[in-house]
Length: 454
Image (spheres, rainbow, N blue to C red):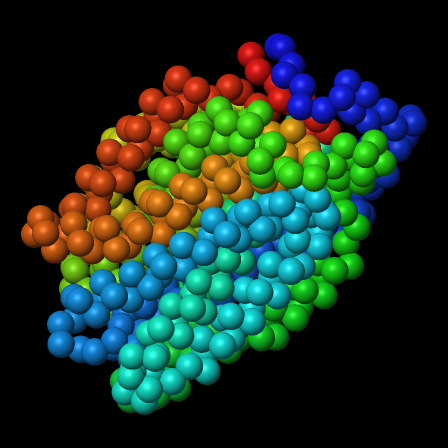
């Protein structure tokens, strides 16, 4: 390997720890504490973010005029996608903040922003009460959610991986996608409980607010846990060596452009696969295929449980075989299995559960290698910024628009299989990017401050 240095030669790896002591003074007890704080904080963030998707069909009837149900649902997904408009701003802010001030303070601030905006959605009056102001306020609060999410996933990934031991990074990092899945399960179960126990009048009057109002106490728990964790050994070592970048965003684009673009190229499949499998699936099954809301939410719960169960298994495989083989396996799997999975969803409830679970496992395959890869491919002082740029851009352009595009494709084509064709095409593109541009990362040192190439 050759090194393209973006810092002085003296800014190399930290000196090794003395015998019997882990680098950075990290012990098993500290790692457990970090893992717990990361897991709970990330769970809170993604339960809050998923609350909008959980109640998407109900929100369409409450915040938009009902001249056309498809138009109202499209408007709801447009607001959902609009939240992603703020993600680049959040990625820039939190990425820069994490590289300059610290990973832990960045994560504490992100959970505070997310919980506050989600709670406020829960107290919004609807279109019947305040007219056009209702969807405008919904859009602004959804944008604040997006702003927070822009730094959360990549920030939490960098945070836990910089504490993880070599050879087990993906397994530690799998806490991030795993808690996303568990948060989605909790959200879907909340939605299932609400919709199955409340009549239509109660649901539209106050029941829909429950998932959003839960954000208040959950956010305080996440904030408390994150504020009590020291920053990572990697960041503290960078502070001691005085190699913290003053303009990490600009520097990340200057010296890590290939990594940013590669990350974007394969993350588009991760983004669309996840949001079709999670956020879109409930509305797709109930509005496009004809299942009841309860059946759609039940299918979502089973699929997300399959996703959550697959995460640690796929992470262990990634630590053993490397990131590149698992990423390529996922893309190939999407190309081959997506269309049959969508076809199964339209056959019966059992078929829907199986088809959605197939998609969920494939998302777990790509996600549990994506998380460690996007952290490992960037040097320490540019890690939060570089990973946030590439990953967030993919989610803004493709993830946030996935439900909207999928709904539009079904309407224009007249076939419920249209979203499957869309995901297959993107997976093929990501596969080409991985074959041409991705360099294996799972043996690279995380405490490096240079850009390493083959």
